[in-house]
Image 1 (cartoon, rainbow, N blue to C red):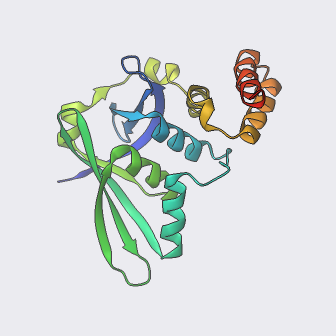
Image 2: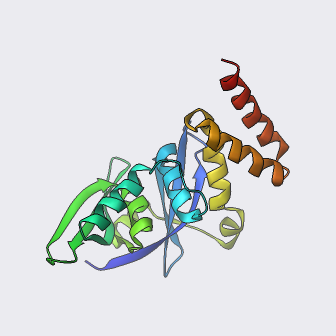
Length: 198
């Protein structure tokens, strides 16, 4: 079967599920995209890797996996979204040991596979059978109205402020004030006050 290359288009907050996001993967040479529902942790990890500006205080799970791979000369060659079963996408990532040439394929959640593909700079593919079954056509107006990665990162940040350290919150507060996002700054300030008043 021929592989169809995909590119990451956007991350949007899900309209139908709380704390869920939709990762949109576009057909590189076509007008279809795969909408994949993912959790907020994976959305944040993907957005941070794409944005490339934020460095978490401690490595995220996908960053840890990348460091582990680098330490043992393991690289990702490709990710394939290969199956859709009862609304759930299944993926595999293909690894190679650059010293021995040994290869392995590992099953993964699609969100994890995509988060790793970004970090290893490897291509993402699917099959025609998946695109014809679950792909939706997008228009130019869809492209104009999509959520950008920086907006998606902001959405994810605001959802779970309780997971950030006090130092991280103070940095986010400064950024919000600099961008004159006073509503967001107010929410962050309240979270900092809540913690420091204990």
